[in-house]
Length: 146
Image (cartoon, rainbow, N blue to C red; front, side, top):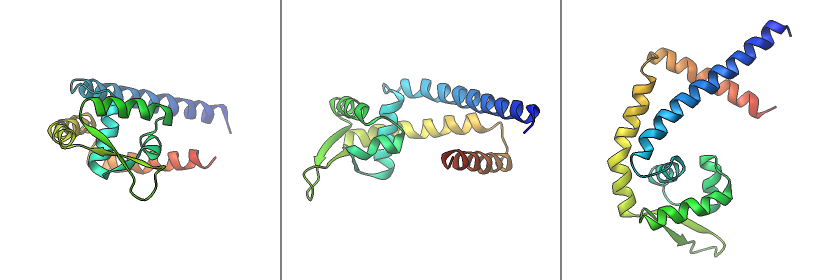
């Protein structure tokens, strides 16, 4: 591999990192206007779209350390957005379940959230988005297998 190829790889890494940071910061500012932090929003979005989740598995699904999940779930429970429910078949398992209040909250804010993400992506055409999705997915799968 040439020095030029190495520099190109480094540049790609920096461009991907900066783009992700810019988009993520923009979205996180909107999330904070809802009175949630990004992790709380991620948990609420997961429960809303995927249903009840074992507490032990939430961290892996939203890329968060398991120790932090207890804290986040406690905060969301205090706000009345979710509750803990014991598994009827395995006493070792506790599920996080969205409450009616939590469902109403996420239903009221999610359309604005998805519209904001769409707005941030409008710089790309549909074809360009599809290409980026394919290429970044290919890169991610490759990196995960190394």
